[in-house]
Length: 169
Image (tube, rainbow, N blue to C red; front, side, top):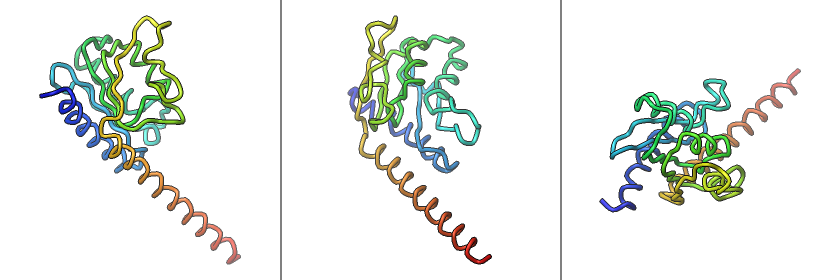
């Protein structure tokens, strides 16, 4: 398989985990860690359900990969994630020595793999991560947009319902 076809295949897997996040009413981000054409870690956003601000898809997948490989260094591993990593996750990726990160949608508010900063390739750090962006970007971005559109609609309906309830008194 070509690298491009390979990247799309693994991003499809990450999208399936993004669906799991959405089913739990979490922001739909999914991630897989791959080594030697095998998934060694999976993750999806769990920050809300686990009351843990660090439970991003990348964090969960990297923790699982470390346990699977019995090593805190993830040399020769690739992380596939549906949304560009934030600074917290980018720091983890540098420290865990992930070889490569492939992401779908860019994050213009908190993206640390090129959007607002490029922590993954900062020459001042002791490890730089290879980055491939935009893999299945439209699908990844549409999933996030649809989620936030639905959430805004639900919040608006709840506010309207609350206002209607308060006028009855």
